[in-house]
Length: 418
Image 1 (tube, one colour):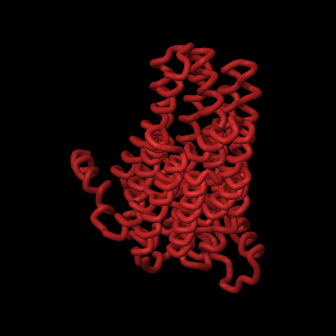
Image 2 (cartoon, rainbow, N blue to C red; image 1 turned 90 degrees about the vertical axis):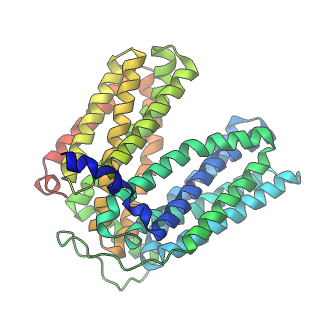
């Protein structure tokens, strides 16, 4: 045990010794930092132009819908084109878009419809970046470094998700809203530059237990997308990982937004300050869990981790529905975040290690699209349940997670996953 703990730190930081991984980490972190900037910039400048939250909803929807619709297309192209090229072109395209919006805003020529068009174009281009940024990793680091590499990338992503909106708000407060778009453009341009300097290598051999990949002869974009969906559905282990990811996204979107807001205001009576503490506890726990997963390393039974995560989150949701003490709720949220971060490192590494390179981007895009699709359903359902009481909201989600965990344990193939 002492030897294992002593090696945890070096094991976690081992990927950072490789120049190609450092370039990938910097590029992805800059891109996600830019995403955080863009949310604040689009929101603030839309409210400044119109003063209407309804219009803001339209602008953000114009960004979200193309991203959701085109992610399967992006995943399909990632399996037939270079993932590095997709990331570079997407980054530079987003940089050009953000620079154009910023310059138009500084010149006083920006209109709501221009913002909607820019948001739609941004979401469409981003759909090609997101699957590629996950599927490129096996061609950058060795197989035995996937787990700590995913942990470091995850830590960078979670940090950028917190820092990006905060720094964007500071930039807007000190200057003008269009300047945030220009800073955003610099982030994406630097991301493209970092990724362009990566030279990928052939992927490792996939797990022989995985189904064979689709034939190389692919005719149309639609057929390639169907092949990716079919491949995902016919592997029971992969189905389980995707179903759990979808369940976690369901639990993230509604309970951790609508639920947290209602809990902070109606139950804990702490207002926005308590809401901020809950979100900070979730983010902090996920960051710690991500780093812990990378430090532990190895190849644990991912299927059992999947079931444990579902059970742990289900128990946490039940506590949130029953307990009215702020310290107890914060501790519970912190523990839930830790579990999400810890299991996420191993689940993602398992997919990257076991799925053939020629279908990897499409499998990842299927997982992402299901997450995009379930988020609005979760928001609506949790909004309705919150009108009843907190236990109805969190208890229902706890039941969904408990059933998910039991379904995972019922499959021998899934229990044996490593």
